View 1: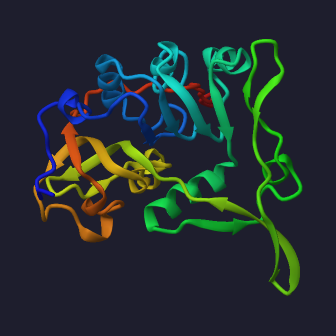
View 2: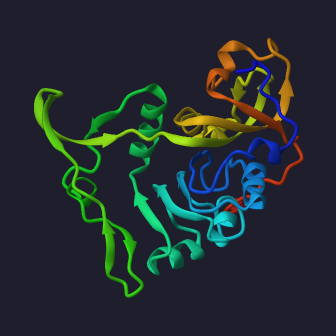
Amino acid sequence: MTLDKVVGSAQEAVADIPSGATLAVGGFGLCGIPMVLIQALLDAGVDRLSVVSNNCGVDDWGLGVLLAKQRIAKMTSSYVGENKEFERQYLSGELELELTPQGTLAEKLRAGGSGIAAFFTQTGVGTQVAEGGLPRRYHGDGSIAIASPPKPVQTFEFQGEPREFVLEEAITTDFALVHALKGDRFGNLVFDKSARNFSPLAAMAGRVCIAQVEELVEPGDLDPDAVHLPGIYVDRMIVVGTDIEKRIERRTVREVN
């Protein structure tokens, strides 16, 4: 692995992502999404992707642009609103969905990046998350083609009383795509406020992590205490500049008195 992670273009950065690959993608709603890399992936023509991300963007932005061209075969997400095409594909049986509680999804990515195969959590106990039966794929007639399987549940003594916990397996993927505010040539990354969201966790889970950064600095310019993701997790970087388009999902304002 070379210490200088910077490559010349988004097209070069994603060139080895094949059809059928698994991807972990940072972002939350439209905040902190690696849109330049997503567009390059769309232009590359790959399909049958299995994507792990908190959500799937909207119809014309974020992962929604891949979905609109039917490049995504499966989504693992915690929130699937705001996207009518997602709804259509899922309910018609064109798209597989593994719906996962948000905190559990974050921990599954973190665990995968940390070499932890599985963990126990109380989240989902007593629901279809643990008991199985959540529709993952429908038939065209609306019947369930694939349902989630039951997961092991075990009782532990916790906080002074026996409680049930469900076993959740970690997530690792072939590639990860993330957006960062700053990065140095060695791949150390700093994310901007809430745009940090799932990005470090997605980066950790990918065997190959590709980052787009707004500002490139030299090694040593970043305060080590300010680094959110160490460069050991990052394999390639592109510089996208600070004037890239950043959309707001729902713009709200308050009245000025």
